[in-house]
Image (cartoon, rainbow, N blue to C red; front, side, top):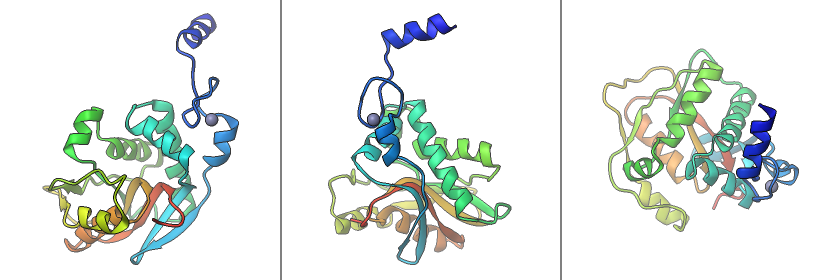
Length: 211
Ligand SMILES: [Zn+2]
């Protein structure tokens, strides 16, 4: 087995998700930037709990998971979110995870539902149930180049409630990164207006200051 793994390393050398250096999936330099801590941010009355400050390195790790489907990068995000869930002291028996969904176009391109997949894996490891309560009900633009105001407009009214999902428990919104807070606040607004109770949000990364 050793020989096979060494051979595959030669053919497909592992590169750091953060800086592309040949070696291991996250090098010690990038590990310093992607080292789960605990950050609490308040966005329009919503408590957002995060593990890692958003940086160029963090952005590359997220893209490696999201756009390239690399399992090791998924693992870093899962580990960061679980770290925050344990630090945030939620009532484990009453909370439910609600994934922030991507648009159908993005899901099709990636061949999977990114955050819902991550949530399911977290649920397996923590026994916290997942409620896929949110759906995207209209076209939204890619947010990466939009200003905070444009993001808020882009997301307004974008979420609907999935069929056959009814309010129960206290909900924690799960996402990879919070940059302006437009997405999580709109998701919380949609759920609250349908009688759900949103306790807060947990994200792997947080941009500071929020843009
Ligand atoms: Zn690196």
